Image (cartoon, rainbow, N blue to C red; front, side, top):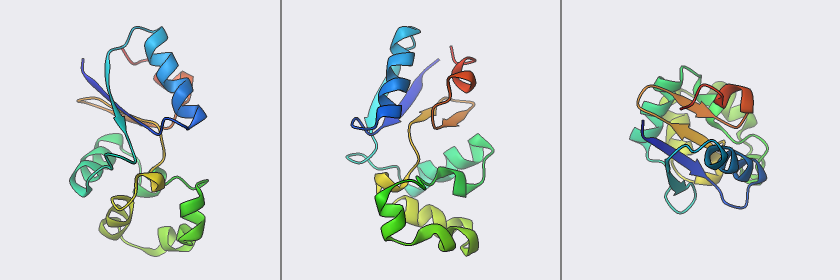
Length: 117
């Protein structure tokens, strides 16, 4: 199976996830989430595939999230508007993301990643 791994290389959680993938001999395409920001169409597909609400794709602990005062916006805006916001800057997107043909995992919790192979 082919996997797409979106990361911000300076993020310690992303580094842990990448090491986990390598340690488990899982082949993946690596993508820098800021240099190659997810498009609206990609985000739409990934959100649908993940089964999660769009607000789970926001990096709520990020500086940019706080600077843009998105906490209230995320509660009140529609999905299309939130996807538009996410598509403007990779630093707004929770990471890492692991995308496969039939699933999307947001963030890194080793227990959730155990079924990947």
